[in-house]
Length: 179
Image (cartoon, rainbow, N blue to C red):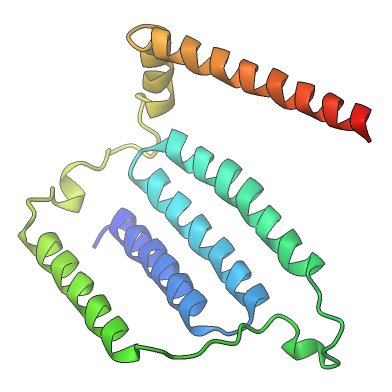
């Protein structure tokens, strides 16, 4: 077993373990921290797959933006009526229709299991580069495609984002004038 295969299985186990911890914990803050570990594990899998742009995007958007916002939301929604700090962020759930939920989950798992074992995947060692950092970069390829074949879509997306920003600023100024 090569080092790349060991890293792949290690990061896969890390992401799956963190996902299971999210499902099994009742503390929302612990679930958010496990989500952090899971997202970093997925980003490491992107790096191993040679998708450096997706890895950086995963870290910047999901870990740096969404997860930080989620953790601030958890920390700022403190309930004062509970005296015990250990039970502040617990999610109280009722188990309604547990049988059907388990049956649907087992069905989805069965379908995904069948698809994985009947798909024609490449063997992990056959497409890994021999050198640690290959000369080709997916980031450069994405940049070349954005500036050549997809330049029209790139410009339209930029104009739409500019219009949305100007509209949000206009609405904020109008709201401030009325208050």
